[in-house]
Length: 305
Image: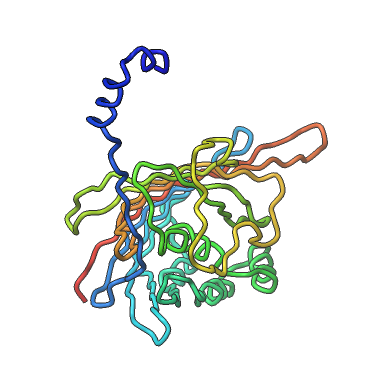
């Protein structure tokens, strides 16, 4: 291309440059401004597949929740009330008294006006309500986790990924960005990077929404050197570089596709695939890889109260 350009007369090269200027990149600004005059129904369907050696277990979960934002003195309160829940293990529907308790789960999120998550209430109480219905070793493990564990880690990480990292940003469509992230496991936190690109706009029954496509990778700079690191505008309580005790030997990969309303930061449609794997060694000479593949499909719809 350089050699061809050098052969052009200078006047002709200048005329070409003037006649075909680079189009300005389209930008979009994200603002946290959730509607407080309506309720929403969140329908989600997920599968979790655990593989180790030649074994495989599959769990399917379908859930309906009712969401509503309400104004507070410092921002907003989001109430997340489970309405219904169904679970199947290896294709067989599961029913138990524990599920009856889970169907009454309630989470309350307190969020600042700018979208910063202040706290999540209810995760510990929801977990504690199940323990009296458990037996044997399962009950002992649950009691130990209640005594030692912190709750709400998944909720905090999800809010950071879908809201806090975007709030207040003005970003270009069709440009590659990345940010550091982390997710919790039973053995601690796993740190990884999220690569993403915005666009195109898509028409939906509820208005125009922006597509976000993301990939979960170990090292964004190595995967895509031209990607721009995105530094959150908010001072989040969640620090993905130092989320807590780390899980050794874990790796998280996957991808996500979302339809977002930049004017509110509500996610109207989300499809996520996340693979978490690690190796254990019963004896030094033998290693077994455990892999958990999670798929989630959610849809948000306004509902009448």
